[in-house]
Image 1: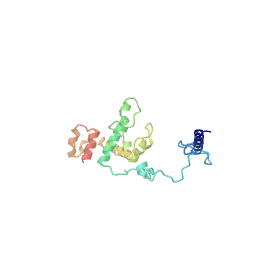
Image 2: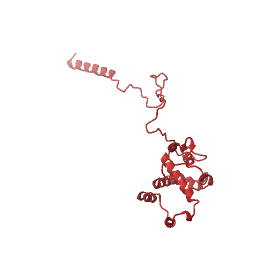
Image 3: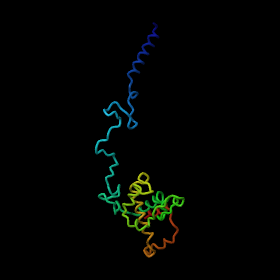
Image 4: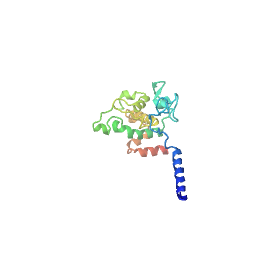
Length: 206
């Protein structure tokens, strides 16, 4: 056997031996898909049960008022944070995006989708809703009510509270008279309506 043949034979043995031993991640079971079967655990399930009391970081949500709109299990009558001008501006913006298509920008239930045949919601100016605690509106946005779906995914909790504050402002403005407006503010009643962007900019300046 020539030297070249012996060299090639030795090289082939090394390659075959190395490939047989190189396991790395080639043969490692892949359990990236949830609920996949596994022979490693006694219950034959790759997904392991969550330990009691386990909470994902940042998802404890233990503030009952902020995240559920209740106090000791009862519908809240107070807000979880002060209602500032910035909160009101945010509530107006979110209301116009998510609520006005059905409720209309004035809250009277005549939004564009209602005008096109969707079921009309009750007016937010109804006495029943004017007397409802603020937690009621948060709960409806969170869990839905009647024909209204929930908006828990689309609207974060702080924004649901901001919308609630703006709804209260709409209810007040819908029943107040000019005499209830401070004299210094009355000239603004005749001014052209502001856009959402202009209202937000005005809030930031103050």
